[in-house]
Length: 287
Image 1: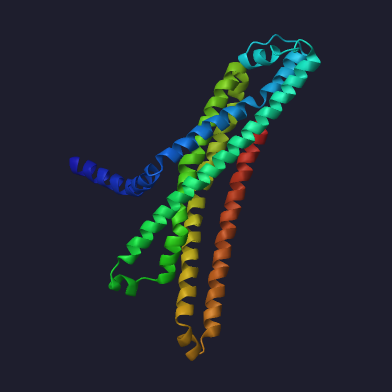
Image 2: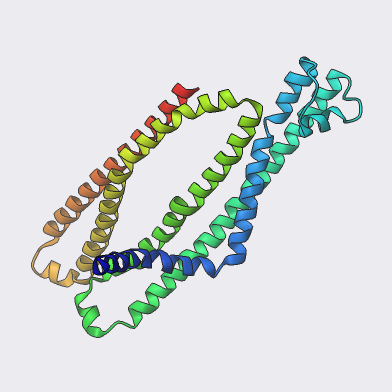
């Protein structure tokens, strides 16, 4: 029993090792990621405030309902807001200011994410390049240069994609959803619970499409590496290809590889569109 647990722990440690290396790259830019986190929080709260001016127009300016929340009370307390037309002006101005603040925060968040995310990618590419330089001549005699180029130039961006898809985007979504649910529940608990009816359907769509999309995405990366390798071999050995008159054969092989790559890309696109369709249909039915 103890030996089995030890084996499972060792296997888990091996599985987590790539993520630990990625965490090491993230720690090098702690200040930058703190800025990204702060901008994410600020952008989320600004987005949640955006509908409030319209609420004030409907409830206070048109419906004459007493303001019970701090934001509505603030707008109602502005100079001249006892006149519905002036209150509508203040609410419209607040809506414009919130839109400008949200746009500015989104631009700052995007620029920060691009800067620190790409810096992480190039740090990894530098390490891969340095590691390749230190490999033995035996390794280089057996390795495919095209595949190594694909690893350094293309696969490094996989870390960016992984961090975006597995950490940044889900974290942003969970935080936004949590705060949104708190605000919604404070307004109407019954409607909030009713809105959550669509959650199981969206989870089912994600579970159904996720594994298939991962397999096809892996095939797409393998096809890209194969194309790089084929082009490098053909160009590096062009004198041999021409000497034996194999130009048409190499061309046919390249066309075959590109056809396979297109089919894989089509499958990945179809899976992505089906996932979007399922998610959108769940949201529409919930609405």
